[in-house]
Image (cartoon, rainbow, N blue to C red; front, side, top):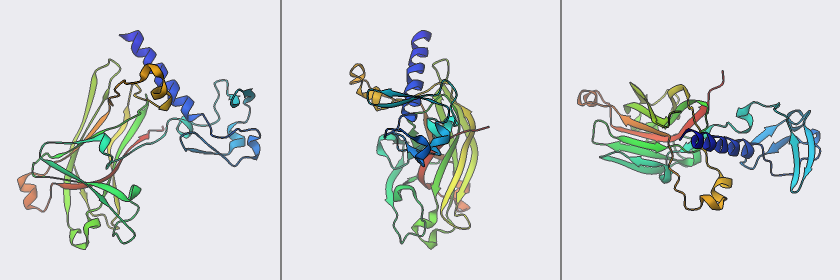
Length: 268
């Protein structure tokens, strides 16, 4: 129903904006503050410049600054942030048939450093198209570049330096007609050990417009009317191997290691 859908969109977008513009401390003299910390642990630098020209009002639980529709910062600085999903998070992934997925960790002695949260997901399959599906929470009505950060096979030792695989991607999200939109990247992407080892960032999709939001914050969850409401993410990313028997004879394997998924707001 169009009216209801529009209402839900307005609520979800408003929640995201309010969350991104709410700060932990009372800001009495912004010109004296080096930075501001939002309730979602995001830092905004140049507090004086950011709040310059806003009207300051006292509220029952702090201060309000009225921007009157003219924000001094880009939306990507305040509420339209990068969405990071750790691949090892069990609440947001499902393995495809015949696929094994194991959580691995790294330490100061690992050949690959700078792995997010020092852990990643190792995925392997005996099937040609084995893989994993990730549920991506809290997307906004925005345009995103979709990245997958892979951990180099080198993490398992120097003897893995020649390991390589081929992957394809599928992105699903809600369209403005309420139906699922599907985008495929079927061009086999090779993931191997880079010259310097480390993390391999692959842009799976570029500048994908998401027409509707799928955002639920703690304020929404605390509302008594929403208690017991099941939240099902409408955005998913599927990562699959595309290694044929011929490819296998050339040294390709049906195995990969994912650090995290990143949806980065696409800025023109």
